[in-house]
Structures are given as C-alpha cells and as structure tokens.
Image 1 (tube, rainbow, N blue to C red):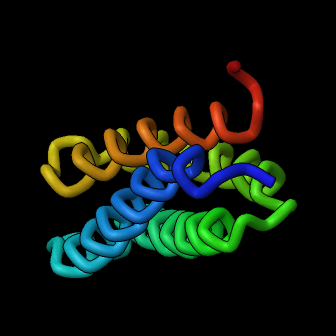
Image 2: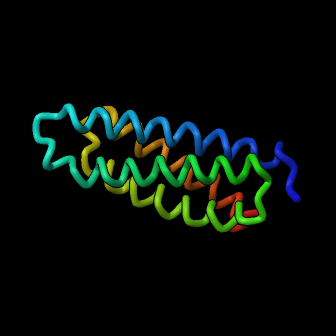
Image 3: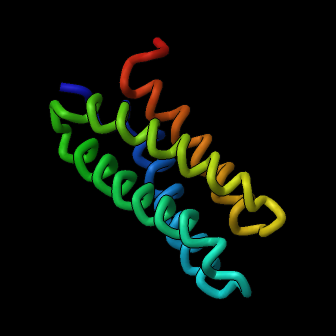
Length: 114
C-alpha cells in the first residue's frame, strides 16, 4: 500500500483543481452569454466531481487510486481544453492551468511516469 505522503501532491492538486472548477462553473453562470458557457459549466462540474473522488480514494489508500487517477487525468485534460476556448475569462484561464497541473500529477500517480 502506498503511503499517504506519496499521494499528497496528487491529492493537493486534485483538491485545488476541484475548487478551481467549482469557482469557474459558478463564474460562468454569471457571464452574459450563459448558453455559450454551458459546456464549460458541465465539464467543470464533472471535473470537480472526479477530482474530489480521486482525492478521497487516495486519502483512503484505495487500491483503485491508480485507476481513478488515470480517469481523472483524462477528464482534467478535457476540462482544460474546454476552458482554454474561453481563456479571455480569467476564471477559465486559471481553471485550465489547474486542470493541466492536476492531469500531470494524476498521470504520475497512475504510473505513466516513474
């Protein structure tokens, strides 16, 4: 079983990403053209959900951590790509950065890089 310390940087990246995604989704609802932001809001919410789940499983020391981190990295990449389409909004640009960082940490965790 992996020690909690080994998970710590990935857990931190996941939690930071989840809160940034929530902030982005909330900010998107306040933009003038909310319809145009619909996909971004949806992706933000999905990304936050998987990031929280990944952080929880890692902090539990779950043997499913690698699998959820692999999935989390994919969803973070999708969210980053969506947010980058709206990078004229600060919240979307910041969210894309948090998602990229989280995807990198999750890929390390999933064992793509050693």
